[in-house]
Length: 244
Image (tube, rainbow, N blue to C red):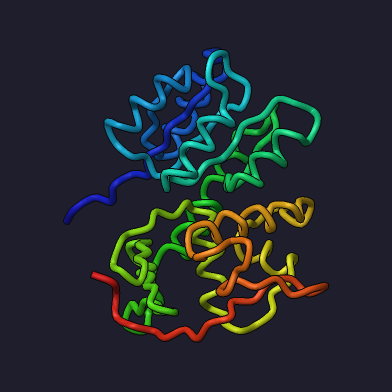
């Protein structure tokens, strides 16, 4: 009988006095943890193998955590939880608007961080797996989305990379075609904890998604803005077999 592979984490923090004991604690909770003391080291670790989740300190010398977070999101990397020591909300807001999955403010209780990790992973698994009824995919206006592989292809069959946040946003629209979704509802579906504090996150994520699927972002035909209401996917959606 094969053993279940442990969840892999990449912990990126330049402060060894926090990183090393936290890595030891997380390993004791059953996670496979690799460490990086800078964004440069983290990038090399990511080339070696993709973790299931990245714990990313915001304030680091050299390339900061927000810059690395942006890279991970733009390249469709793993889920990201930001670790921030700042008292103000600026870093958290910017990180959530980018598409980070959660944040934890230092100092934090390690048990709370473990709970956040498991919550983000559950959400990623739920959003990243196809529905039970035949692992169906989606087709709309010639576009296809395979939710099991998280693979989006355009009408010409070209793969279009999606960040975690963009995938969740598109999935929410595809599950509710031609239905007006206000910001609060979209935040509940795609962002999770405390996202209601950051309404701009929805507008920014919709803008990024439009850049991926709209022919002209100045005149969007698929994801339309409903004045005073929110957004609506103005397309019929057909459930299909998984995209190959």
